[in-house]
Image (cartoon, rainbow, N blue to C red):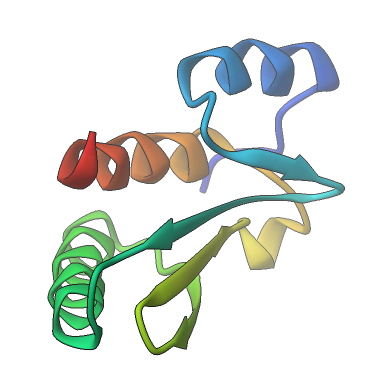
Length: 94
């Protein structure tokens, strides 16, 4: 299991995922869709990425708004896995 990243490494990764917000020991991005089913299709695609990476984000769904939070729970902070999954999630919409 990877170790948590030092602050300077987190800042370097944040430049690669500029749509995400760094909040303490996690990163978050909010996605807005035109309708409920578009958001759910997105959530299902994220679930496939998470399962493939064996790294599962917290997701909050509110109609057509999906908030995704990434952290490595068992490490208590951010690891490269969080940013790798964020990059893959970004590829779904960017």
